[in-house]
Image (cartoon, rainbow over all chains, first blue to last red):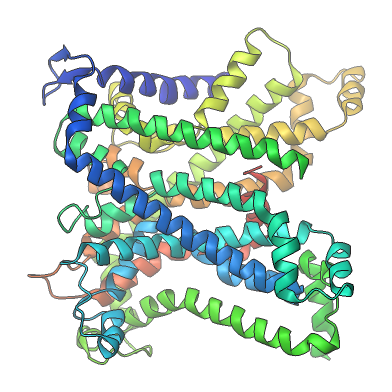
Length: 278
Length: 298
């Protein structure tokens, strides 16, 4: 008991409290002086256009990753409603990228998207003359990091959907078949409603993951660039705090993030309550 | 003969297959379409890794070739040896293994103990403690990096294995999993043990631990992957090359556009080595992995 409490206090409560405190101070770059500035850090932050840019980037990234992940999960679940053979084998064949760290996945996709050697720009050059160069075009860089992150996470969603699918009693499905419901119809009227709590849960988990787990892929691949087209909130906390040494602003950003997490977690608990009925 | 025994093995090892109903003959063609679609998904998912592997076997000239060569070449050894020596791969893998194993074992041990305390003991402040652990679920490391960094600095743990592993050990998820599991253990077992004069720690060791192996295995796999793939935390608290973990260490091999020779073959060889251990763990322990994944999120 004691170790857990100790670790919790030292590494969770104290830091969280420190962030909160620092966000009300302006600290000199060497950390020797601290001046209480009240809400000034927040005011500054919220009046800086690049913070809104970071928020917008974060949402694009999070929605992209969540959309691809949950969408692919649903697709596979829809295909698997026929209760075909070898589902577990498919699950494994789709799940293994989960073991790959997003930064490593990012490096692989960095090459796939490589403007001069990558296979993707090469293939696309047959279709369009548009230059798909992530170094020059912000949205290409964003697509790169989204796809790389989604790649590692698709299997996670699929595993959950399949688990949910197998929890649906076969009798329900058989009854629907007997009543003449086709595959698509069965998915729409039985499977999807029964999977909706899982869908909701996965949306929240994917959002949390892409809000906070996305640092590595950004740092390894684009460093927020080109310009700051892929600068997301977590990366900005790091950049302003560690590279820019603006501790006050960085702490204020941490507090903003905490608010986001608490909001998302509250959503998650709502899901937990719902799940009891299902 | 081997063909005849194959289906039995499958149903035995994959509980999922047992649940499936026999497909009706009249919708067979539909199943064929589904298999084709699922296989297409598998191929799309597998392509990036295949491509990375192919690149890791080529020479720089082959890497730069247009159209891109999508078949493996024969330069495996030199690329992997090059990547190994240039990124100090031995050291990187060792560090990653330490971080992943120590944080995983520590996390499981701590969570077991605290879940045990929460379930089997009444003490003052129990609700407070429970609530405190609960809150840690909500605050990922990323949110409080700056100040956690300061705490580690104050403890003098920068650039040490302590600093790398201990902060990762507090995990609400694992505590909840064990708590949930202990609550399913019948109370009679505890009472019987007490009657026989078994102390609490002995009860934990000789009764609960043997019952928990399935949960421990499942958690172990999930946490191992989690620990191996840590990025932000190791990046922040290590300054020296000797303490880098592999996910971070291979980054310096990325040929940035411009001055570098585009040695993507060496880069991909290093990436393959970095991703192989966790992927192998998932593949070999997939049953535990899926169990851990799904149960730890309940």
